[in-house]
Length: 484
Image 1 (cartoon, rainbow, N blue to C red):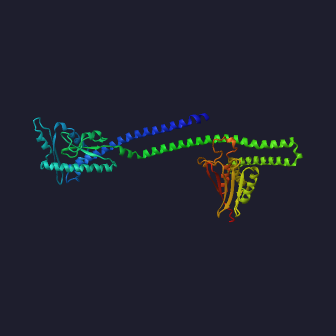
Image 2 (tube, rainbow, N blue to C red; image 1 turned 120 degrees about the vertical axis):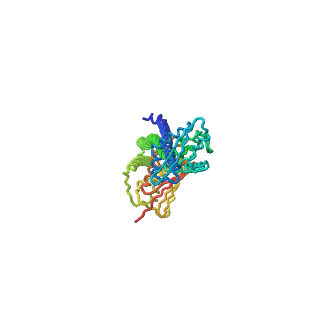
Image 3 (cartoon, one colour; image 1 turned 90 degrees about the horizontal axis):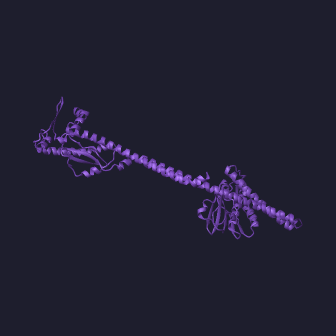
C-alpha cells in the first residue's frame, strides 16, 4: 500500500477529478440541448395560441364575446381548414369574409376564388382584401391595428408561459412572401428560433413569423438549478479530494515523525543509561569508595541521569494519558513561583555554562492545579530553551499576576522559530526542520504537545512569539486561584 500511496495516489486523484469535470460538462451539454428543444416546443405552443387568438379577434370586431363564433373559430375543424387554406398561396387563391350577428343566429360567409390565367393580378389582389363595405385604406388601417395587437398578444402569451426572451416579428406579404417590415431574411437565418409563417387575420392580408435571435440566456436561466447543483457537486468533489490530499500528506508527515521519534527517543534513552553505566563502572574500577568526594560526584551524576530518564518515561506515559482522556489532575493549591524556582534551580545545576535568570512576582501567585504536571510543563519549556539555544544561551523566566490570570514567560536568545513553523510546533512529533541533523539536538517532538494539553486542561492557554535569529518567548496564561 505504501508504494501505491506514494507513486499512484496523487495522479489517480487528479485523473478522477478531471473525469468528474468532463462528465459534468457532457451532462450539461446534453441537458442544454434538451432544454433548447423544449423551449422551442414551448414557443411553438405560444405561436399557436397567438394565431388562434389573433384570427378570432380580427374576425369579430365588437363581437369578441359571441359564444357561437368562439366555438367555431377555435374548433379543430376551423384550424385544419385555416392551415390548408394558408398553404394555397402559390395558386393565387383569394377569399372574401363576411359575418352577420342576429338575435337568434350568427352568420359567417366565407368565399374562396381561384382566378383564370388571364385574370389580372391587381384586380384579384383588391378583391381578396375587400369586404363588402370596406375600402383599401380601411383594410390597411385595420391591418396596422391587428399587427400591433399581435405584438401585444405575443408578449402576453410569453409572460403566461414564463418565457423571458427578446423577440421580434417578421411581417410577410401573404401572396408573394416579401418582407413587409424593417427586418431581413439574414436575421431569420441566424436566429436560434423562428416559427412557421402564419396569418394573423382571416383576410390573409399579411403573414407573421415569430423570431427569437438567441435562446442561450433563457436556456441557461432554466438550467440555473442544474448548473448550481453541478457547481456544488464539483466543489464538494474538489473539497473531498483536497482533504484526501491533506490527510495523506499529514499521514506521511506523521509516519516520518514517528520514525524520527523512535530514532531520537532511542538516542535519548541510551544516553542516561550509558552515563550511569560509566559512572558505576568508574566507582568499582577505581575503588572510589575510598574517595568520598569523587564518589558523591559520580552518585550525583547518576541521580541526575536517572531523573532525566524518569522524565522521558513520564513524558511518554503522560502524553498517552492525555490523548486517551484518562489524565487525572490531582488539583491542589499550588504556588507557581515556588514551582518555577525549584525547576530553575535544578536546571542551573545541570547547565552551569548557560545563564538562567528567574524574575519572580512581588505578589504571591497561586492556582488550583496539579503540581506534578505543572512542574513538568515548566521543565519542558526551560529544557527546550537550553537544548536548542546552545551552551551560551540566556534564558529569562518571569512570572506575574493579574486580577484573573497568572502569566508565565520563558524567553531565550536562541536561534528562534520561523513563522511557517510556529503554528505547528505544538503538534505531536513535530520538530522544526532546519539544515541541522535532528540527531544533533536530542528531542522527541512530544514536549510542547504535552505542555499545550496540560495548560489547556488547567483552563489556560499558551502562545509563542519568535523571530529567526532573535530568540523565542513562550507565554502561558493560567487562571488564578479563586476561593469561591
